[in-house]
Image 1: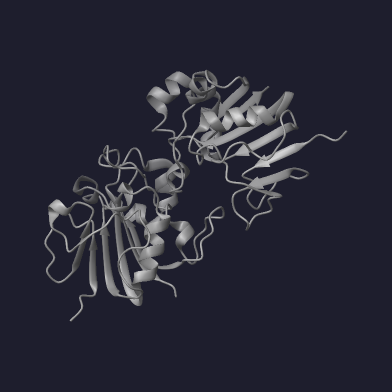
Image 2 (image 1 turned 135 degrees about the vertical axis):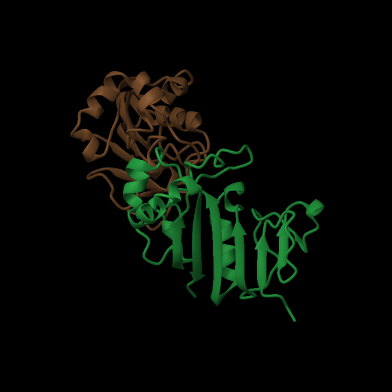
Length: 173
Length: 163
């Protein structure tokens, strides 16, 4: 049976139930491809689940990957994107090209508030959260800041730095 | 003769009376042009007043961009540049941004661009403006960026340039 799960940028991780993709053949993924290059080598509506953890920040832009994920993901499927928050200590690694805030992908959501970006490939937002180190979770700051993300980004982001951003998206077709 | 005003990257809120230039067709732009393609389709010394709000962080090469803007500005004409400060979350809310500006980055750029800097300022959200932080930050910008910028994040950097 054809696998319906895709792990992008799988690196050394083993995922026997999924198709793994990486740019480096040394990691022995099932598919070797540069994600900056469109089209990706999969047919339309192939996958039920796409995992994209700590990949987007390594690419030249988000437009090609989001377009391609929109194409290869099924209508009922789900895309899980994880990227470092721009205040995270990992965000400035030398191989990272992009920085993300809580509102970074707003232009791609159905009800996104970004006015200056237009795209015809829209996603429904299933879940979005910003995650913190245990030292802050202890005081339930993650719950507070996820409730008031705009205030977090404006006033607290550099004093209480976050770790990662998690977006769970469903393509709108 | 009426003043010629050009709004670069006008989007959907073009400045009144200005000619708009944008890369996207879904805007009020009069000229559709990709700013990474030189030269721009405007004559030398043509424009009296240029607005480039939230544009310079999108172009591949800001020095080349400002040199081209310098060419189309008439002598004595002005150019207004606005861009998100690097401590503002808006700088990281748009994956198309290529770089993040500080108060002092224009100094380095102007070593290679003949514009004169009339004035510049860093702006803040309403709640910080109340406490006089804007006044202090603009009076002591070096100390602000060194010690205070992540405690009181700014909003935009505005620069007024003159040919």
